[in-house]
Image 1: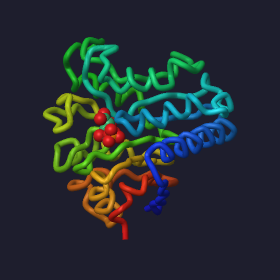
Image 2: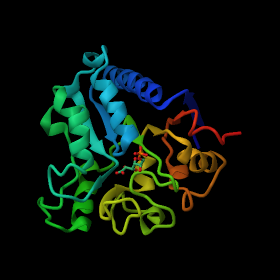
Image 3: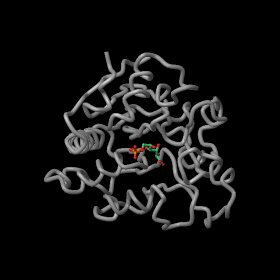
Image 4: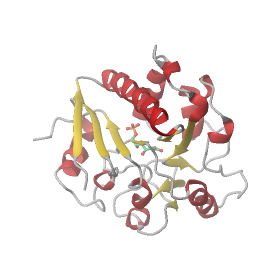
Length: 241
Ligand SMILES: O=C(O)[C@H](O)[C@@H](O)[C@H](O)[C@H](O)COP(=O)(O)O
């Protein structure tokens, strides 16, 4: 099992700016190494703040944005363009401001898409979209009770060991219906970056890094094949020994 690296920045905005710089470098390196970079995106404040900092970075154009495959770790199962969809928020933060190749933006189907309001069908479809793709970097957030993507403690989704994408219902964090990568799919990423800020995350962060069960703290089960990186502000790191 790869080690978990922990990087702590003094505040949330510095964390987002530093993670953005790190992401640009990682994408440039991936493109230099194998041509097309593969990036898994996340919802949440922290993930969107990182994308905002990427967009305002002087190094923005160091990345050939037409050679990035964009995927999502999870998505809120809402109509296309809904303000609460991760795709909507990530597009506003970055994707709609750089020269992406639309064919390389692999969004999860919305609730008014090809499968209508069937999240299970949307999840099965996305499993075929990602296939056995190993993201160069998968960005993830961490919830106050330890969720990551849309994998919540002791939920059917966090227990999933074979399917790579599942529908999630009755989520404690609204909206209630989502589509999410499972831990087996998350663990195919080369690098997994768990990014979170604030004292409310200090407990799940400390428990995850102390070896908590992924059933109790799903973020504890998010590991990359090459690297697992926890990007924290000092408040979220406050309970680390
Ligand atoms: O769709 C979502 O809501 C996200 O995928 C979710 O996993 C998020 O990353 C965490 O809840 C942390 O969110 P914050 O960064 O806003 O605390």
